[in-house]
Each structure stands twice: as structure tokens, then as C-alpha cells.
Amino acid sequence: MQDNDTKAMKNNKKNDTEGCPCGNQKPYKECCQPYVEQLENPATAEALMRSRYTAFVLNNEDYLRFSWHSDTCPKTIHLDAETKWLGLSIISTEGGRVSDENGRVEFVARYKNSGKAVRIHENSRFTRFEDRWVYLDGKTSD
Ligand SMILES: [Zn+2]
Image (cartoon, rainbow, N blue to C red; front, side):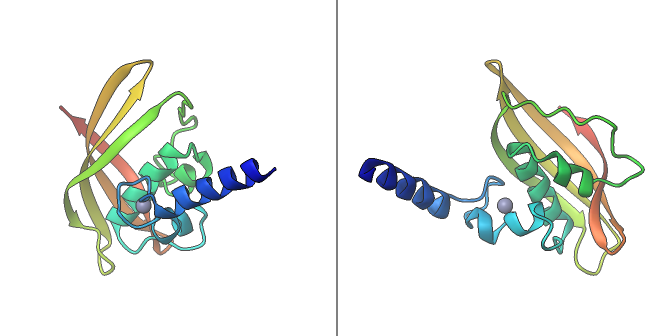
């Protein structure tokens, strides 16, 4: 019993001190969690981008759909529990601020699946829809 308690405490502590899955130093609950749980809307396109990466890490399809423009959201989102996300780097942003209607975020995301390492370099477009940021589409490059 005591062992289990100790273990649970350790796990909680781990979650509290670890940075958010999106790579921010801030803990998950102070970073992407309010967005992923749809309690708050991200103020910027970059924050939305980060929360979507976190949703991929957590296999949260609901949030991916919620944060995707209804015109471009695919019928099927391929989430694979075997995918191990390794990190997100924001390369550049354009617009996407509180006062903007559109925004662009260039990023590199890396993951591993079946022992294969994959690097995604994408230029994503974001737009405001019903007064919140949503993902429109993206162009990948090498
Ligand atoms: Zn985050």
C-alpha cells in the first residue's frame, strides 16, 4: 500500500515538474491543458499550433477536430498510439497575433514509429473562425 502511494506521488510530481509536451518549459496545466480541454482558446496562432502538437502527443482527436477549420478537417485523422513524438521546434511565425485575422507558423516536428524516425517540416496556415484560431492547412517541405 505504502509503495503504491509513493509511486502515485512520484508520478504526480513528475507531471508537475516536467515541461509541457509542446516543448515549453511551463508545466502542461499552465500551457496547453486549458486549450486541449477546451476551457480556453489560445490567443495566438503559435499557441494553437503548440496545443495541436500536444493533442497529437496525447492522441486527443476531439481537440484536433475542434481546432481544425471545418472546411479542411479530414474525415479520418490517423492517430497511432505507437507513434512516439520527440519534439516540436517553431521556426518562424507571421501574423497570428491577438489582433490578426490570419497567421502562419513554420515548424519542425519529429516522431518515431516502428523504429523509423520521421521529421515533418511544415508551413501551416491559421485563420480566425468564430472568434478563435483554427488550423487551415499546411505545406510540408524537406
Ligand atoms: Zn504546451
